[in-house]
Amino acid sequence: MTRAAHVVVASNRAAAGVYDDTTGPVIAAWLDERGWRPTVTVVPDGDPVGHALRAAIESGAAVVITTGGTGVSPTDRTPEQTRPLLDIELPGIAEQIRRVGTAHTPLSVLSRGIAGVAGGSLIVNLPGSSGGVRDGLDVLGPLLDHLVDQIHGGDHGRPD
Image (tube, rainbow, N blue to C red; front, side, top):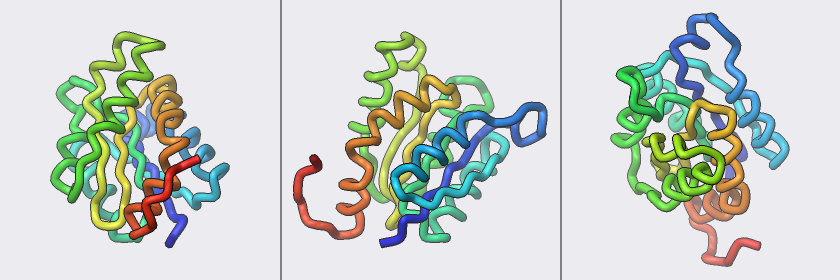
């Protein structure tokens, strides 16, 4: 099994160089600490997110985490770019990310992020805020390796 991971940052302003993205590097460092080889791509919201997701899947990334584009503004389209690619949706992951987030801010319920499996890739949409990213990574921490193992045909052992 590959340990390649991809982070897709959906941000019109970061893609245009208006400011530096801060969430992508946090996710990449988190993955790196767990033995994954992450790459980060920063793209504008909308169709470019879908193109970046397809490229990550085609490259063989076992894990693809997005950040940004999950809210309700007119340009927030990450879930719409993700859903058509999924073979299996994992609603419990997205629900838990929102649930954990509500301990920090009631705004977490506005995230429309989804999670699922596309081919051999786990895809998880995280919010574009640093707090939302931390909450999402806290949820993924105990699940990630077990889930990726299952996607690639591993046995049904229980995570520690």
